Length: 215
Image: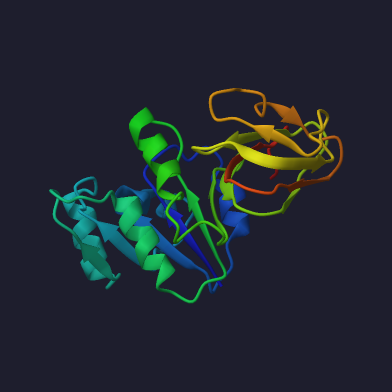
């Protein structure tokens, strides 16, 4: 079972997301992410947030359909997505996939990425996904499945990442270091259907942009 969290950002490829979901997966709406779930013809497992972006009539519909809702104050320290991630961590799921996390306000997009830097998420299967782009943190070796021509960007997070070796990329790294104030790890290309990333120390933020959207 996986948990899909629907944030209120761009939702450019609903069919891609819909095809990923299985009947037993949890569908968690972060406030107006509720509308993305409705867009693909599904019903949220639960709605979490301050509900300031859900119309009053739709809040009435939540009650009528007896959809569980956890309402938080508008004046709070956490974003709705943060609250949803905390909830998902308490569930017995093998992976957490956040969609609708890109686009819109730059601060919100950056915040969505930075939340995943929490030690609770590093090392777990948690990623941002919109159908073209997936993004996640790596604190140890990782294999990425894609296609030749896909873009892979490796961004050292906060401190230099040492001993990086890659296989399956156009511009390979061989026991090298990436620094957070340099752009060397940006816009590499996959040359096979699988690339491997290994390193000694540090944390990488990986962005995988598919060359062609999968339907």
